[in-house]
Amino acid sequence: YVAHKVAKKIIRMDDRAALTISGLVADAQILGDYLRVEILSRKVTLGYSPTLKSLASLISLILNSSKYYPYIVQLLLGGYDTEPRLYSIELFGGVVEEDYSATGSGSPVAIGIIEGNYRRDMSLDEAINLAVKAVSASIARDVFTGEAVDVVAITKDSYREYSFKLR
Image (cartoon, helix red, strand yellow):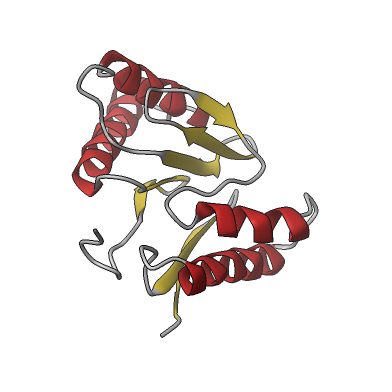
């Protein structure tokens, strides 16, 4: 069941982090809200933002502590703290730092495209084009994948959102 084929699947945490949605939207949104509150709380009380690793650990603890009444999500937390980082976070709280990843019903197709074309030294434009190519291939082969590609590029200096309508 697809609730909405043009739903936003990326939640902005702040100017240096974003969270993707795969699974139940409400569950992912509440976890995103928890993270935004944690980020704001640390900024106000301690004067700095938490690292992406500490945010991934927080989500992991929340997911693991609710394993008997789980949040039905698979998440990607990405951004830039001291360097670019991407964490894949699974249903029961497992966390793995990755160079690239994909979630959702179209992820096997997307990963196939990414694996064949990814390089660590890609330019930002090359990385955006690869992301669009991977999601486009997923959309073409999976009826449960949406109709547009949203890409967020987070660098040391900026947070930018791009949207590509495919149909």
